[in-house]
Image (tube, rainbow, N blue to C red):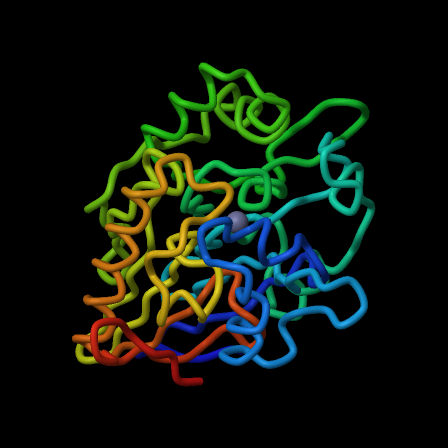
Length: 281
Ligand SMILES: [Zn+2]
């Protein structure tokens, strides 16, 4: 278990942990020293051999007294992602092992909550069975941001066809918006920009609070540099605004922050630091 928020257990469900892309590719406006800056804030996060940023692809399992909620379902197996050979048509057991280690099976998941609809957050939504994509979690409701579903459906991407459409066709989808509440303790914070409907996730029980960032931030270095653009942000300026608003919020409350792509262990807190912020593990 990663941590406990009141009586909600939080478990890391890790799918992939390895070099992704070069920091200067990922943060095109961050300047030529971006790798050194990231390494100074998150030592060991730049692969010494390839120079690429080492990125965990992980979900978080929230075990509440009444529900099992999976926040983001990572890359998955057998998916068509030719642009990234390491993610293309994988056959890997780590994600499933992580779930089993947390004490749950596919049938035990009550909700799958997608912070946004990108390849590395929806993969295990479905699995390939006898040549057909079917929902991996037969008893789950899948919560997806309305704006992302519309955006991806219009694009008709492989990601949509393999990881979203089969869930829609199975009648297991619930389209949601920021502000949506899931039970008494989980709610969605608006953080648009990375995608049109991107949400972060708040777990709030009494005085205990935690926020799962999703892709509102990708590196702890963005606490110091929230203005950096990120390669895959659909609207980079809107993403900067959302990032700063989220950092204001979590630094004000001093709550636990779980960074979906932050260097492991990906858990810490944020405080104000002059004009920007800083990260504390
Ligand atoms: Zn991501």
